Amino acid sequence: MAVPIIEQIIPASNANRPGGNYTKSYITIHETGNRAAGAGAKNHANWLSGGANGEIGYHYTVDDHEIYHHIPDKEKAWHAGDGGSGTGNLRSIGIELCVNADGDFEQTKKNAAWLVAKLMKDNSISIENVVQHNHWSGKNCPQTIRETGAWEAFLALCRDELDGSNTAPSGDTYTVQAGDCLSAIGEKLGIDWRDIAAVNGITEPYTIYAGQILQLSGGQTNPVPKPEPQPAGSTYTVVSGDSLSKIGAKLGIDWQEIAALNRICDPYIIYAGQVLTLPGDTPREIQVGDRVRITCDTYSTGQRIPSWVKDATHVVSQIGDGKLLLGADGGICSWVPAAGVLLA
Ligand SMILES: [Zn+2]
Image 1 (cartoon, protein in one colour):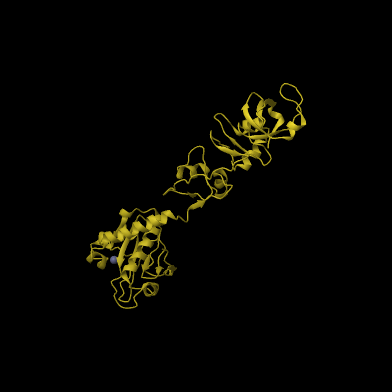
Image 2: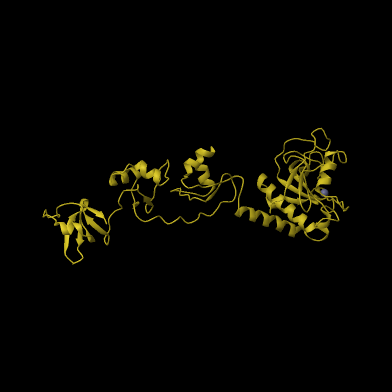
C-alpha cells in the first residue's frame, strides 16, 4: 500500500544538511523517542527544517498516515552515531519511526516497511543491509521495536512489501503493447533490445506478448504468460528451415507484409511451429477434409468438368502433387489441379 511522501527538504544552508553524494548500501531504522501527542512526521519535518538540534538530521520520518522526506537519499546525514566518516552516517538512509502517544504504532511500522521496500528497490539494497541504529553505535534504538522483540517481524513486513510490489511492478518496467516487438521497444526507450531480452530471460525466438511486463534494469523478472491462441483461417505454420523471405516466395506474398502483420521486426526471427497470420485475402493451405469449390474447367486428366460439378462443393479426400482428389457427395472422386480449387 502506497503511503504519501511529502517532500520538505531541509535548506542546504542548515548545519543538519551536510550534503555530499554517496551511494547508499544500508537503511538504518530509528525511533524518534518522542512520545508526546502530536509528535508526528509533520512536526518532525518542521523541527528539522528549522535547524533542529544543531547537526542532527536524517532522511525520512514516518508516522501512521504519512511520510516526510527531509534530506535527499544520496546525501549524508548525522544520524547513526558512528562518526564523521562512519558507514552509517555516509552510506545509510536514516528513517525515524514516530512513537507519538496519539499514533498507531503498528500502522507506522507498516508504513515504514513500505518505505524500506521502496528504498531497497530504488537503491538496490538487500534486506540484510536493513539495520537498527543500534548496529552502528550500540544505542538502544529503535527502542520500542527492540524492547518488544519486534525486529524480525518488522523485517518480515519489509519482505512482504517487497514481494507485493514485485507482482505489480512500476517504475523501471515496460508493459508490452499489441504490435510491439523487442527491437521496436528498444528503439522507443533508447535501450539495446538485447539487454532487455537478457534482463528478462527472453531467448530466441524472442517472443513477447501484449500485457507482458518487462524489467528494464536488473531485478525480478516476470513469468512469461501463455500466448493467445491464433485465430483460425489464413495462417501458415513455420517449418524447420523457413525464413520469412522463403515463406513469402512459397506463398507468393511480400514477406515484409507477413512480418508487419505478425509484428515481427528486425531481426525477423521466426521459429518452427510458429503460426503466422497471412494477409487478409490469402487462402490458407487446403487440407484433407476441407470443403472446396472448383474454379478451373478441366480435371487433372484434361477432361472437361461439367457445370453441375462446378456448381457443387466438394470434400478434399487426398492431396497429391499439385492436385487434389475431390470426393463428390455421391462418392465419385476425381483429381483436380490444386491451383483450380478454392476453399468453399
Ligand atoms: Zn536512532
